[in-house]
Length: 107
Image (cartoon, rainbow, N blue to C red; front, side, top):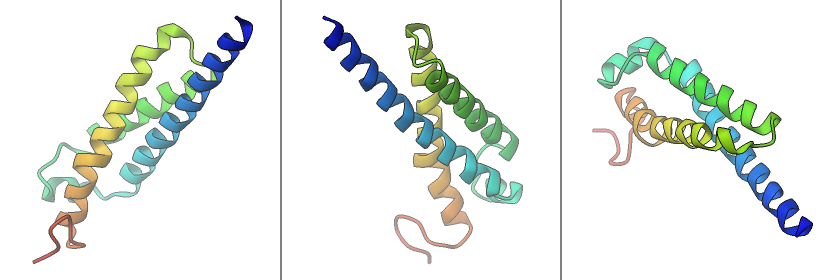
């Protein structure tokens, strides 16, 4: 039984580290953008996304440091979803509005 619990804890830790990497990537990408890029892409402000991705990274770091207590799992899920929304929706729109081309190329 102890082996199963150890395996479960290792899986939680591995998933927490993967989530933390995603959250840090989203925060770093958001931090290096200019506020005007968010306005050109018709997305919320840089401050909003910086706060959201920064909060997600803080929750992810806390989750990994505390080794994923059960109470943090819901917050970690919300944090990785917020970071994923930034990476999947906002980041491509920012790239497209900057003229780098997006999924369909630049015109």
